[in-house]
Length: 243
Image (cartoon, rainbow, N blue to C red; front, top):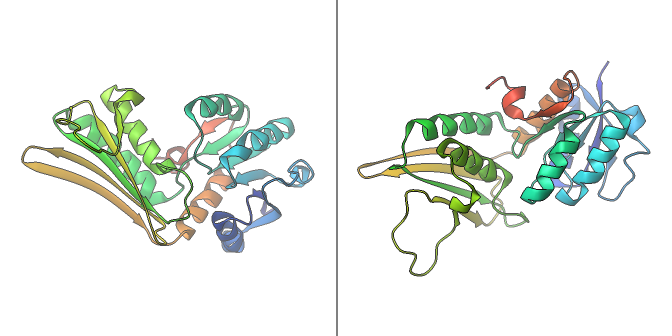
């Protein structure tokens, strides 16, 4: 039987792309909802919720999912650290894939960044640069945020080490800094580069997306995977077996 999906945020860019690919991967979009629509009225007929609406809707999505014991895939970004901590505790009550990026290539970038950060010492300065289309509302992107988390975790640093851009007389760069730079313009789907630079050499890991369909296919792959899992919060590294 085909997987039955409740798609929240169906009128957004990602929502429309997911809906357009549903037939290609053999799933059924049972209900395509917009922000503010009643999820509970449709959830009984669905196996999983996919949410690409707004970070403001995440709490409601998780409340409905936990009440009806449905799996959920969350692709929204822009949550504050405090909100995400609270929402993750709620998400853990059901099978949940929560990822800032559902691209297979980007998730390999996550794995490579973790490896590079573990091998290259503090004398390799770490910076993350991302660029997205002019319509994106949050910065840095969820993908960039995850790349930064990986670097901070490997180097045992906290969020205070992050430098969001630089302006004025900033002084020499400290070895404990991790820079992050968000560029916006045109119709860029999503570019991410992680740089590790030291005296004499520089390593750059780059992923560039040119078609939003890569994220949609990943989200649908995650939906098919998560309905078979036990309650808990997973990411695309779990879905792809990269851990």
